[in-house]
Image (cartoon, rainbow, N blue to C red; front, side):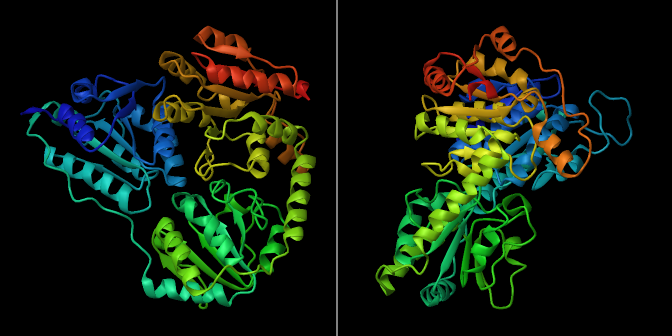
Length: 528
């Protein structure tokens, strides 16, 4: 049946598997809201467009399926750009559908007018396109969903003119053929197996792209006798009990010397970026094999190195079959005692650099349900915890790594909690970052989410203060007057607690998971 295009888009998204949309309605995108309920889609009302896009990001990370947000023209889209930039940096499939003005070249002074909305989207998205017909809008939606399924997942923005949204349109066509990521070439896989079997001390580095292949990783490590690091995003893909697991300590300066001992490094699903290493190079001296779904990541290898274009999941599954077909489990050349001592030394470094954080981390980890999904913010507490907290499951800790924005954790955790009803979800953030998106607490209360919001409150921008001191700059503009976070939380209808000890913190966390509304938990050094 004919419907306004705005309504048809909601029906199309439902047919393509979308169950939840995050957003804020406005006069320019009201036609997009005409068909939401009719299509049977749940809409989550955010308090700010940035929050809506962060919620879509958190939903996508929790489910592995696209997160969708509806935005208004101009400032609504611009408000969401920070979150879209974060999704681009961290390879998250977020689809932003925004209204736009019908024309801007000959008219000035229109509501929400900006010079180039589509071009603005191109700065933070994989692509940003305007649909000038109903067929174009449908085609762009299918293009976005197809690329999410078959290539590196990054945000896409589709802009639809206001007039077009209200015009009657025929229904969308049947869905296109299902797409999947490329699989590694078989001849190259044989070369990989040959290289691993010829190596004395192979070393794997697993990134966030390896999460889908986590089930095969334990077998691959045991079969190859390899040691392993994970990036922060890759935590949980290697069991903490594996004796040659070096943890997520890649950013420790002397990890470079450990990596140099390997004669073959296999980097799977990782950019090996600045925010993974905090130095220019990984430090390998031998050959490298890189496996990635993004060809750009394979373009800077040396002449003796090997690049494998394909999904990490397919690569790891193939490797777990190919290795035992050629050889039984190998005795490792790596020294398990050496690995254990390095991990202890690195943990002690974190403890020395960030007093109190390791102790609080250990208390939380001891009572955290294994199925809990954690969303953290840019805060000193998360920086320390990411190094020493071994996750029991892959893909259960999400952090705004590359773009590195404040304000991510609370709205992203809301999106994650919506995606996983009746499963534990946690937001972990600092006192300053909380104030970026604090109003989204209202959304969490409206939804009745049993969401613990752990706030590390040191009353300052502690990481920036430390950076200034290291640079021999007198600390400046790093202390701000904080509000009464407990009173604010209660004003929104949430619970609020300030435990006075680590034991009380553990009890408070357990109670928060059972509460009918979110619980803001203020953590300070007084607990120690």
